[in-house]
Image (cartoon, rainbow over all chains, first blue to last red):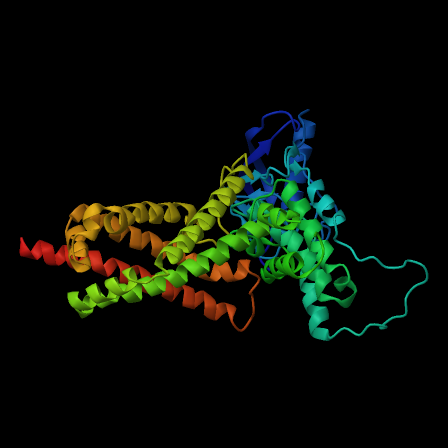
Amino acid sequence: MSAEKTMKLNLKIWRQKNADSNGSIEDFQLDGVSTDMSFLEMLDVLNEQLISAGREPIAFDHDCREGVCGCCGAVVNGQVHGPDEETTLCQLHMRRFHDGDTIQIEPWRSRAFPVIKDLIVDRTAFERIQQAGGFVSVSTGSAPDANTISIPTRDAEKAFDFAECIGCGGCVAACPNGAAMLFTAAKVAQLVTLPQGKLERSSRVLTMVERMDAEGFGDCTNHYECSAACPKGVPIEAIAVMNREYLRATFLSPEGA
Amino acid sequence: MLRWIYRFLNSSIGRKALMASTGLLLIGFLIAHLAGNLSLYKGEGVFDEYAHFLGGLEILPLAEFLLALLFVAHITMAILTTLENRGARPVKYAVAASHGKKTVSSTTMFISGLVVLIFLGKHLWDFRLHKEAFEKAPAEVVQTALSNPLTAMVYILGAIALGFHLFHAFASAFQTLGVNHPKYTPALTWLGRVLAVILALGFASFPLIFWLSQGGAH
């Protein structure tokens, strides 16, 4: 590990008062940024200075700061969650930057994710997609016996690859088309890979895709930027699974007749 | 009764599936078309014979109609998807970097498709709609059309645009139709790229050779 150093940064950050106002990029100079800080800690330092100066701090989403909750995220120099692979913004460290760097920080850009304030966007569209079918209907009475349904390890691992999605919205932000297919597909693929999810497979994919389309996301044209930007590395295979589930539900199931 | 079909064609995945399946069928047509055209290299007589054989097929009007239908469906879905995608990000990024996956080919599908469409219009005029196309021997029609430098240029550009289009299209179509498999997907990706280069070079070879030979004669 290299010793801690401090650096001076030029920050260009999207400021927007509320959903109804027009935002713009604002310039900030920040001195004494430690290389050991996380990206969000760097923003904390900037906000402390802004508050001391009587100015409005920069609004950004964050919660666990451990890379598992899916709350944080911004587009840093054009890259979703910054330059590191499979890393959320909170896990990105300032040692990835150099003294004197200019860093451009923007919110997720999507018709379906309107900016609420500064770097915070409204991601409730994801919740509505999830509620449209991203669940399994099970009795919640007494706890079921463990291992009543055997699942091959390969299937369990595959389902887990899809289940790693934390719903941060980075896939939408990274997609040149603003599509939400990787998110929706991760849910569809996770559930259909497991026996418990097979019961509702047809109705689920139809209603979830219908909801996704209604929210105003774009259409996937297979650039694969989403999977490359995904902090959890959800595989692009998920979208193929959703596509064939959708075709299967449309042409081979009685659902939606 | 047909509500589910309406729903399918209005869905993002349905439109993409129709674009992908018509696209794959059109690639099939292109392979057959190039194979037929290659008979030009066997001599004018062989090409004329092939053209007369095609022209004499009773099923030709139906085949042409179905082919036109493929084009119309493919282009309609492409326009709808492109419009949808243009609207999905009303505010653009000030800095838009790549995560390393998108390609020149994948980001220019609509433009390359448009260039191919413009070429197709010219091509249909030259060989199918133009009055002279039926008055001369087929090989002669080719010679007349391609010895015009402007026409040759449009044909070469059309072939290049087609190559760029197919470089992304082939493997993308399989993914859209739900085919993604650790054993086959890498092979399909490379097969698609090789096919794109072969079809582009193959189709570009005719205007290139006619243009060059004509240039030498003058």
